[in-house]
Length: 245
Image 1: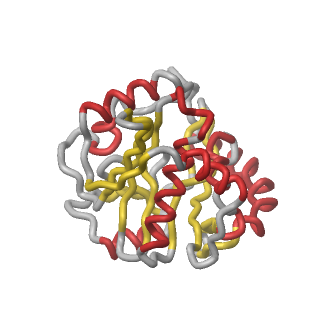
Image 2 (image 1 turned 90 degrees about the horizontal axis):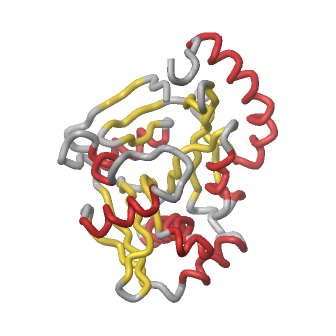
């Protein structure tokens, strides 16, 4: 990522989290950052921050199917914790993917420290006693935001990662929150497109220059046109060296 600004809170206040998320900021480990660019190989590509307007949210057919598939499993939302069982599942998941992730859950969430400055929750999904999926999300006063999801690859057919996403939305709905923030969409890497599955109609996209959130469906064609131009301009400006140099 090319971070425009980075803030290291000693303790993230809920109101400050809400305000930051609304302005295109996001948590990385124990920092709070803002950017519109990430690296994809040796190229910079644009990202567009997303949220769901919970007042307009209606789960899609896909969301309902995933909820039904995971209904036999036991889901529990707990205070923030990192256990050996969780770390073991993370390593199993990490070995199954073809993209980079931090070496451990602790490194992903806490960086080089041991303190969590954010107000976080842990989600555990179990098949009997077997831990099959884990999620972490942060809460503010009127918003929440997904941070990390992973699962046992043997359960991939029921999409437990997406089910955790839906659980975080349900948590927010039950508490009368205004928005659920889900990170970014990347034009240049389709693996982030899954974030649209829950309900495209209530999904909004952030326009940083205008400091406005717009309906995603109204902006999709435009960002598809903008992305190649942004990529060309960003790579001229930053003059990235080829990966490995």
